[in-house]
Length: 313
Image (cartoon, rainbow, N blue to C red; front, side, top):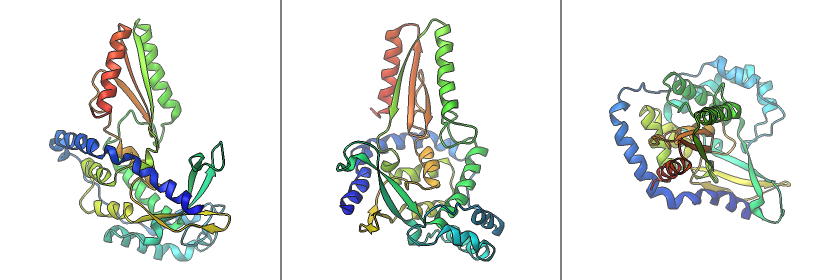
């Protein structure tokens, strides 16, 4: 039964297989159009992780969280912060310089949580991941460095409200409503398309994600670390004291991870770049595309054209 759950959760990434050739074509066009601007970007490289940062992360651990596959309980890690901060700082810096992450840190235990409906149907469950605590600390350090680079270079779309400081569902909604109300005040018609991508985080193609990281300016020294981070990941389902066998995860960003959301934002950052007469806004994997025009027919035509572009047709 648990192996069946695990196979079901792993198979979510296969939904994207039929789209790979189309997405690759779009990506190559995007890359060619941005080649000239890439040289003007600042380059992201990892900076050394100080002992104080590791100590702070250990001291602020939530001791109510469960241990991950490495069995290290956050309660004891927090208790030993004064003694392990320095060696952990060395380990983290070694990981960033050697582009290697301990294999156990790329493992996850998954708990199937019933959403609603028939409990005998696996589609009615969503996976909740338990990751290694030390891996999450390292991810937080990397995430903070990467976010600083993205923010200082204004890389993320201003129309992405997910996983960003001073942004929320409220800011996304206000932007959309303000645009529509202004158009209505000008006697225009507005039409909108709301898109909720199915299994969006689970279907991220690793090759395309790495290309996106290269495109925004990650250095050749930093890229191998992210390749290692995404490769050879595995998960097992746990329930009631029992566990399935581990299976390799071939696609997607790690569920429940610290880095996953920011990597996903980078992955979809340019999806709507080619829209000219349409407006759009993201909140993580939720997207709204909308058009306003003097006639309803023209607005609908504009929206259809925008949707065709996003669909890579």
